[in-house]
Length: 116
Image (spheres, rainbow, N blue to C red):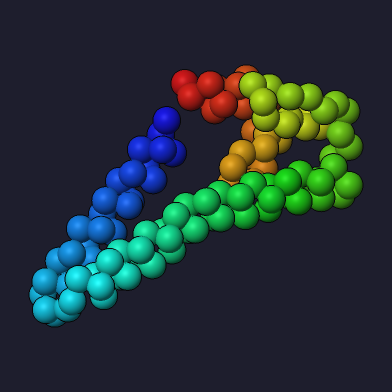
């Protein structure tokens, strides 16, 4: 729902901006439509591609931590759809959209994931 609303707002913003620029520079309707189409496609591309790139980077970081972790991993789990690594010192790393995030214990991790 949130992503769909973002798409709609970006498309409307690009179209309004292209209308204003076309009016300001006194461009033809064809150029205005072309500007709006290209701008909208570019924004949609950014809104779709950037999250996927970030997700793949987080996945690579997770795999790297599994292979080369500083402390030995004593357990792997999932919490609310996120991958969690439990280390021997009691610390926890959870996979987020920005990459792996470390916590001192699982309670802190759970508070972060649950948004408390």
